[in-house]
Amino acid sequence: MIKILVVDDEPHMRLLVSAMLESPEHELLTAENGNAALTILRREQIDLVITDLVMPEKNGIDLILEIRQLAPNAKIVAMSGGGGLNGRFDYLPLATLIGAGNILRKPFKREELCAAISTIAG
Ligand SMILES: [Mg+2]
Image 1: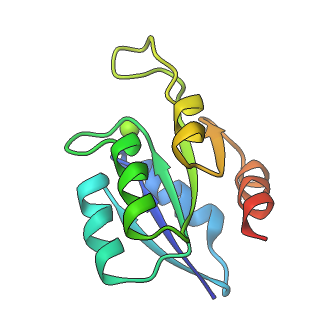
Image 2: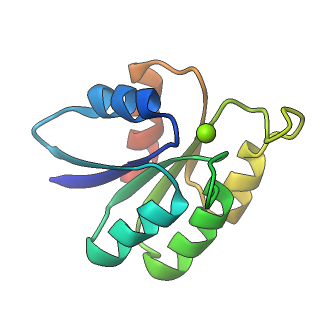
């Protein structure tokens, strides 16, 4: 059983990613921003965090930095539309530099999500 936390401020993305990962081997949790994600990470042992980068309250970059301290063994996949807060900055390469094991550019297909997870899960 793999415990997966899906973090995105858009409800439809939380639903979509959760639906893509639905499996008897996956236990899925969701959070709407970095603060909500950290509350869960302090309480539960999470194996994999799939996080959006541009979110209110606490963004994905700050979240990844805090996960590295709080849960260093958790694997991280960062996902983003590629545009930053102002649509001009691409945060995905930065996410890789600070600890995301893989990145996904939205929109992505189920196969791309599964591939992104399987290459870092081993
Ligand atoms: Mg967002």
